[in-house]
Length: 142
Length: 160
Image 1 (cartoon, rainbow over the protein chains, first blue to last red):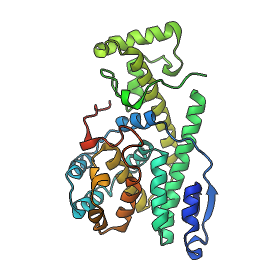
Image 2 (tube, each protein chain N blue to C red):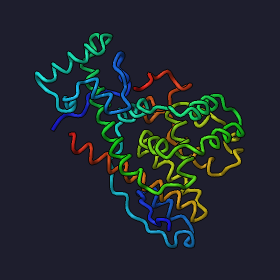
Image 3 (cartoon, rainbow over the protein chains, first blue to last red):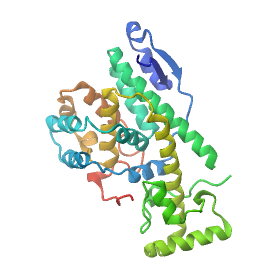
């Protein structure tokens, strides 16, 4: 059974509150209490650490650079649908918690079904883990 | 308590010193028994000398290079800790994959259309989930995090 928990920050909660009562029904909202966003130099380093090794990924990124139409952009996303989970998770690490928050808010703002909220739930768990990691490692280092 | 690495986003990458994607490679570069984060005094001098030996092209940038290596090490520790937590998560929703694709397009700079593409072009993408992801990424702009959206994909060094 799917996890029905959403870890939401203040901005997310405002977007969630705007949803219909029917849609909100059954979802457990937990406060996202971790605040350890990445420093700008951390995000720069992470973007340089990311290695696009997968041959399909490398080719599609080249296609993306010249995409000029809705069809081409759609094709780029569709071709990368089979992105390995480990690469997807590393992408979120590289993007950082602030970027994940922006995605979560955008999905909440357009959510119409429980399935959409399931996507929010999974992304919010990933953000929660990232914020927790930022706090734990920074605290042990400095 | 040690100070945070003293380096600005615009200083990265320091010319001549590699960016490491794996802890083992970084450990090889600095020497296996060195704790990069806590190096001070004679041990620090030893490390700086090793870095000069490993990267002769460093010239006078060795102190800045050390700060970069510390930051690199910190991010490798964070990455490993994060992946250890999340690799066991049952994440399978299409929004997770599409968001990851959006993220990669953003930070590699390959998705310049995200910030520069016309509203009408984005609006014509047939999949609503893709449009939502693009909207989320678009809100990040390119300015809040220097260097993230590298125009035209940039010419960043390949990490090792």
